[in-house]
Image 1 (cartoon, rainbow, N blue to C red):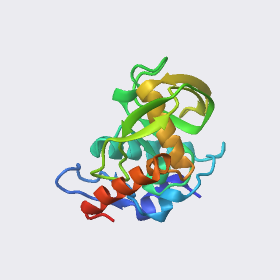
Image 2 (image 1 turned 90 degrees about the horizontal axis):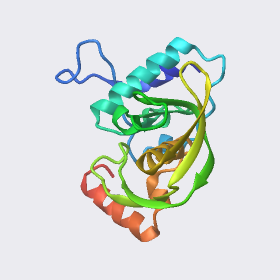
Image 3 (image 1 turned 45 degrees about the vertical axis):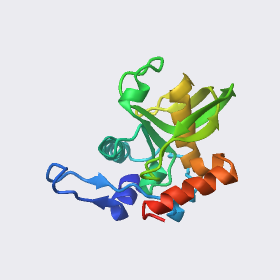
Image 4 (image 1 turned 120 degrees about the vertical axis):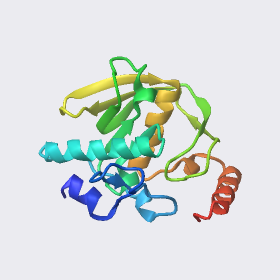
Length: 195
């Protein structure tokens, strides 16, 4: 299926006061939308590159508009293996200058542990759920030119990439915490009126 058409078919809205005329804002799917639990397919080599670039541009705009540090394609209803990491988060990664776009990412090595607070654009209003993640990861992925890359990330950057890859696998950050903590998070989320 055409990536861009899939994203635009059901997940756009126009916010007239905040977006330049003609600009599309992808809607972020929020929990408990069952589409967040879908497993994403690899982006085929023969996928239309212009559509991929347009989708990435729209995802970047949505990520920045909503104040995210990362965004995975399933969060906008597209079940392909594509994620973004914001410019501010990616800027210290080795060889990265600007927002980081990963097509078909795969963690090939994970080392150490860290427990740090996480939030998620799919859980608006919820912050500071501590999640245990790898401290260092090596991730292989394709860039927008479809070139193979390998990148070692640590700390916050490693945390973000693990979080976004989880989205590609239908896993949410609440799946990574204890049952008690998950219940507390969902109670707080319920108070936001979204559950």
